[in-house]
Every structure is written in structure tokens, then in C-alpha cells.
Image (cartoon, rainbow, N blue to C red; front, side, top):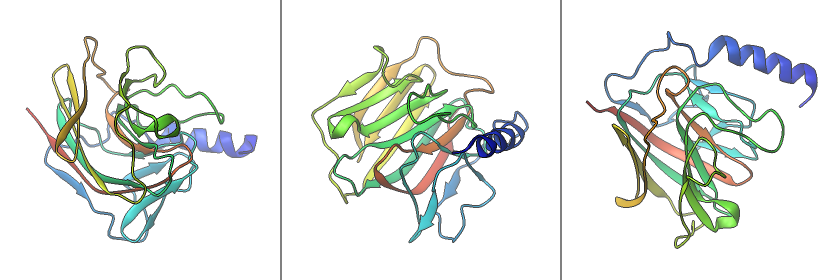
Length: 209
């Protein structure tokens, strides 16, 4: 990305995303992506996100998320279907982020969110991370691998200080966060990607009390 394009994108992001005036989800929000264009609810921070056969597809985003321009409730359930066509797996989303951040260079990226990675690091490690996906406080497991072409149903639940992640109805990883991510900088959901060929579908966000 050349300098002029990067500056232009940064200005657009600053002006349009992560705004305290964005609508907060108060009733179940559903997006099945049964259309041609991404639409005005989504902010693309500079990757090749597109809709293919009614699903979000992305490959080689290198930590440029696609942010939903609606604020998440403090407590909520997020459900979606995910699939990787790549042998490396590496399925990733972010939740309760700032709605605008992205990697400024092809390399290190410090998220503003909880990061959910299934089959990362060469399909060897799955991780639930608090902002830094390489930090010692991340929760990990290495017993499951992403199967290319298989669709998985994810459920992410946040209630109070607890963040839980379920895959195909079974508990996958969980975190008790003593300093939970809250406020304007931690209120958005985003699809993310590094190199793998990913598909996302049937997003549903349900507020909790």
C-alpha cells in the first residue's frame, strides 16, 4: 500500500468508524450476506473482503479487519458460521474492539479486542486472546485442527467478566478477565484474516442483560 493510499484510508477510518454515536445493538442483529455488496453496515479497513455465494470471503487481509459499524452491548452472544479452504486453517474474528484499528504494516498488530483464532500458527494452536495474540495471558489449546472445507458454528458469549467460546455447541476456550474491555474503544465486532482463504456466514448478535 503506497503512502498516499494509506493516509487516505486512515482519514476515512478516523472519520467513519468507532464513533460513539454509532447505533448500539439492542435487539438481535442478523446478517446472512444474501446480497452482492458488503453494504453500509460494514467498514473495510483495506483488504479484499467480498461476498461470494452468500458468504463473506477474504484471503490475505494481513490484519485489516472488516468492522461492523454497530456497537456491541456490554454483554452479548455472537454466533456465526466459519470455514477455511486452506490447510493452515487460521480462522479469526475480533469482538469488543475499537471498530477502526488495522495493521499499519505487514507484521505485528496489537488488537483492541478479544481475538478468537481457530487453527492459528500453521493449524497448530487455537487461542482466545485479550488484545495481544502473542501474550502469556492468552488461553490456548492444540488438540483440534481446522479441517479445510468444513463449516463450523461458533458462539461467543460475554457475560460480566467472563468470555466463553463454543465450537459446534461444545465449550472451546474461556477467559475470566479481571480488567474487562469496556468503553468506546472496546465496542465493535470484526472479521479478520492473515493469509488463509476464509468464509463467514450467518452472523447473529443477541444482547444479554
